[in-house]
Length: 68
Image (cartoon, rainbow, N blue to C red):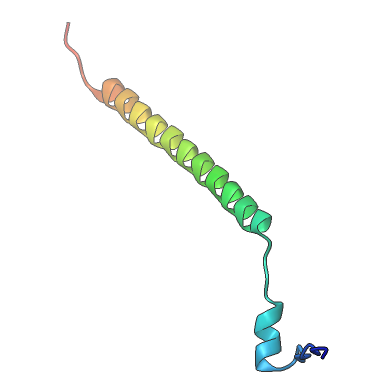
């Protein structure tokens, strides 16, 4: 006896859920790109914070009055 597969319409509730499939490489690739973007953002923020501290120090040194 041969078993016939049941066809599910892609427009039904079960059919719309059965079509949603992402390969693992897409998920891992998106995660890798996200990690690279996050690391780049953190590096840029550290650079901006360091420059702000440096400029604050230079500004404070240039505005102090010294008597010799």
